[in-house]
Image (cartoon, rainbow, N blue to C red; front, top):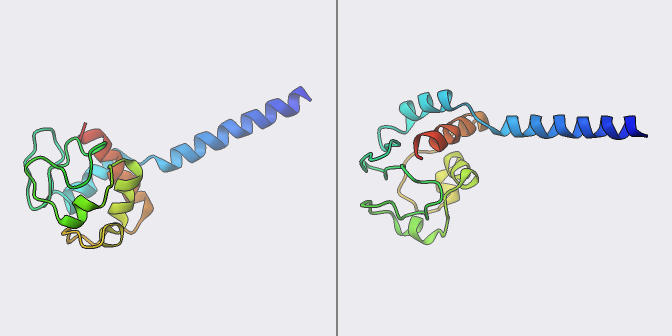
Length: 127
């Protein structure tokens, strides 16, 4: 009985670690993607300036449409979103579907691993 419980416990631990690892992105790859696809409109570093899009420093935990000094669309302000890993990931996947009427021209990242990578980079870069 103890061996069976121990085996199930070990299996559950491995499965939990595997699924957590699958959801974590690679910040290095995310930085490269950000530089290729996002940097033209956004800054991520602390003290970065607003560009065509808002500066992303401090984005996690911030209410959508409230980046200091940036004039966000009415749709973004009214969305009620507070940015976290899930909402940023959903937005990066399809910005127009997630917040209809927002101003962002980017059509989204189609590969889930790219979304995970950019979110991992933003978590690190925007603290």
